[in-house]
Length: 111
Length: 115
Image (tube, rainbow over all chains, first blue to last red; front, top):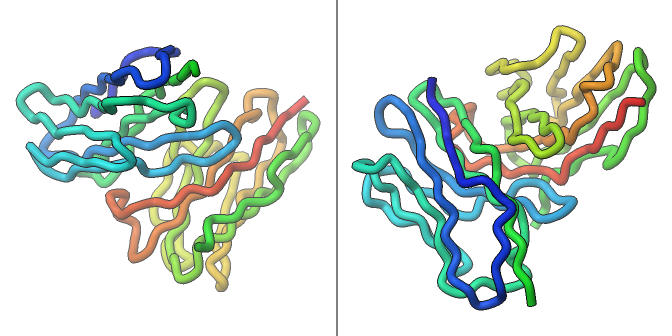
């Protein structure tokens, strides 16, 4: 079945470091891809999305590019801040219109 | 801007009791989704409603039921609670139908603890 695999956490970085959180997917056809962020005690917030191959989603300094050849949608940010500490979920919507989440990656940013 | 409202935010129940969780979607949103997120887990889709009708069903136990009312708010009713039902329950809303690719706005969740 369709699935999303993302790197296990926690990921701990120093402020201003470069961030990559890997995400790969398995799905039939051309799913839409998403990154959600969950801050402590809050619900999921859509961070960015891409709906077709080679699309780049971006928001708040985060970017991810839909790579069909490698079935990946890695999340990157050039310089992280303490306020970026959260859990990040990669997700897809498949051709059956089901949203499938990855297991989440907890990110800790140290001042 | 108004967001999705869930109540209560925290709920403690004993085994075999019942619980009712409420979700108030963003104004003018007509679609509501319920998710269950266990500790350290990803959200699991339970059920969704569009225009007051059940539109999709996921891994919702038979002990649970839900409905959407005329004002579009939704309630998740949980009976015969089990320890394993302890989780964070999210509601999300969207506009225009049940396509999951439509942007879903999530509420802050209700943390249910079953003792």
